Image 1 (tube, rainbow, N blue to C red):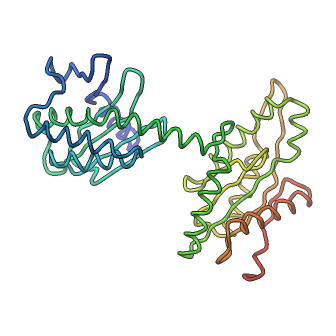
Image 2: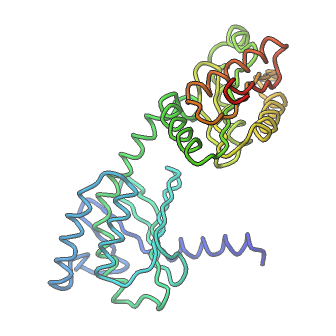
Image 3: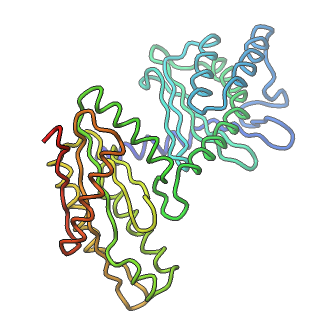
Length: 326
């Protein structure tokens, strides 16, 4: 059996064996695991632990902090060594401690919301039935805070995302680039940016209409994200312009990446019925000079972009370093 097949089998086994925490109109129930007692605490100490857990989980709306607090509190009641949480639709993953050993997997949901997959781990010994029953009751305390945290996470992500292309927007670019420039200057890491502008995009809008132009922009954004590394970030800069932030990449690596993106876009097969819509892009590349500001970096990349436009389009131009670093 190949590693891929083995990984898929492990995932399927986890899904099949998941302990489902479900909230319906009658309250928290899980008829497979419990009977009419439902999720009521089984002892005075457990009731106190549940009360404290509920109170602690109300202290934050940030999703990572909710999960961290949950794990810290339930470790008071049970021996646990690790936690893994994932919500694929929100592209959110969070891990704590050791993810090896014996797992107990949960699929958490309400009657209207899927709230993700939670796995708790023990390294020394497997979970006993009494441990699992206690965990079931503790995990139910996570349902409402988790739902609120996910909604807040979605709202924050939506405010930082371009609604048309799914790329980051100008607000997220300003925030993330400022942070990355500060870190690169502090630790001496290379950092580069690409500014892309689609060639003659107005002609596409005028010829085929704005709906087709929007379709082209979505295809371009997807192509850029698919071409770049996971560590790279793509933003819609405005109109038909995009910025790609290349973390820990020097000017030579950025030029290679830019040429790869240019070729991918040039060879995209974007069709409208039987007609193919050719698209090319001009790209300006700049690599951060020591002590340079975010504004200075973008200004040099933008100047290089205008150079690419002036020299025939569908090409990459690399910015000159600042005079202080020439």
